[in-house]
Image: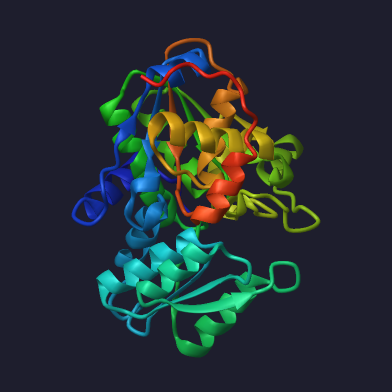
Length: 330
């Protein structure tokens, strides 16, 4: 792959403009007080299908030729990319097949089926999802739309940061969750182009720190087993090859958060920003609230990447959040 560029992300923004939501940038005095710095959050939980994933899925699939996607699309996901792919198929008027874990959250599965997506499940611990996708794609003539490992996916994901930095060019540190790495790669690429001095920090759950460990080793590593974390969208065993090539070069740092940090951030986002964030979507905010981000001055930007969580699970998780005295909402 040739180097991912700012032009790739600008082209993706033009392609997505008619179909993607320009999600709001949210702030609150109580958040600034809790973080110790001015903070603004890009609410991608309010994107179509409930996460940033729609940006990359649509941009990748719509960039394929009509012949390439004639028989349909297929992709693997813990749920968010799958919903995005289902909507993409609907918009492009081609069938979409999604391969998801058998334990994927119910609202994500329901969302896929409501959009007309065909659902195939697999067992995380016993089956290789990528091999399963490749087998079905070859058998049925389907075009594979990766969840992260694609230039177009990274470029599409980076459009969220392009919007945020256009609205708030004063941001000096930008914080994003890291799973497959597409959001981090696209974000860092456009951010460094717009402001070479900006810091871009990735955040992973402690139980799934494959990117952090890879950066420490100087090469991609693979965790021995699928991470057991409430942040299911970030439960990868190894960084994607193409995203790793970008992130290992230009991400300033990767930090990790605990399950307790995550549930606390979910509760905070609901109380103070009036946003429902799924565990994966709350990780970047958790790192900021926990004082884990290397930051010296100025505004911090945070990507709340998704909101795919059902009501019983959301209630259970935020109920577990540590009660602490918080500043009044403003």
